[in-house]
Image (cartoon, helix red, strand yellow):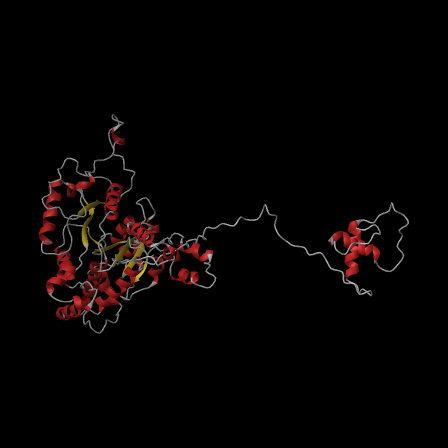
Length: 505
């Protein structure tokens, strides 16, 4: 700055020259410069200068604002690196089962040939493991939308435990029609065991199925999942179960309770109520027998285990009925039409379930080792030519019921299990003399374990049953339901059953 107070044209200082010009060529008006001690605040001068820049300058001067650059300090700026940018791998939420090889990525394309080959060999050494998909079609469709977000409410609903059944429902009604209400309780998982039951009227089929599935002998009989025979029905010699009842336990075991086979109560109901028979049946007793054969043939096709209940040993008509149902059983559906070739190939792929003979209401003498050996021998002779799996599944010697018998005591042990008469745990005290007060407190000799013990041992063996494939493909619970519906429709339209019905007259 010169001595006269004017700024030199060759020097330009933005802040200082700006304030000096404002003082030299400020706005019109009187400016009190007589008081050197009252100098104006710089911030006030800047605000007035900004307000002055917005007005039209009559003198023609253009006031220029100081540019403000918004930038970080040099210490906070990121240092530039010469390394190439690293591409992050995308997170794969779900891999499809059909994909055998991983898709090529940009990272693999940028690698040299040797590194890419080594990476492929390293990934190829990983063992192949099954991929479990939690989400279903609804969730997959929701995940494939534009936003890519899945409703958390829907996701949590799919992870909830399955709905617990409190009582049985109808799978086949009394008119032999299929019901679809059981599909709501089934899941998409393959670890399932299907247990069916057959037996005459009043042998305790519903009671056994309730105790094997979800109930205990101490529970109230009115709360059993399979409805038992009421006192009124028992007095008029009627049947409680009609058709096929369905129940699935929390252990994912499907139990199928059926109406009694060759039931006189059903025959009496047809005759007295004048129910109209289907056109293919002429006589009521023929219709009742064909209903029983249809149910038995159906169980032999869709069940892993079929329990045959009888309350006395033994009815030879029952074994004749089982052999007839085995003969009329529909064949296992082939995976393709080309596989229906020779008869020898069909025999190799035919499915037959395990069959367990349950002797209910067994007496004390039935638990005698000699009697038990004779019962096994008789069943083995009757089922000698059957293709049903009646051996090697249930054993009373493995239950430690007869601790003194060797394992080779039974030459041909069949799937036979004895259940005593159902009773309370509190044993009735025996009456004795007054001179011996301790003797009445001793329980009476039974000759066999208690009812609770035998039911517990039978239930543990039933849950450990083998679960072979029912068809040529692995079936989930829902697939089994559709498979059973198709089998039931095929049984009702079976030409072999129709021909057998025609021969019965």
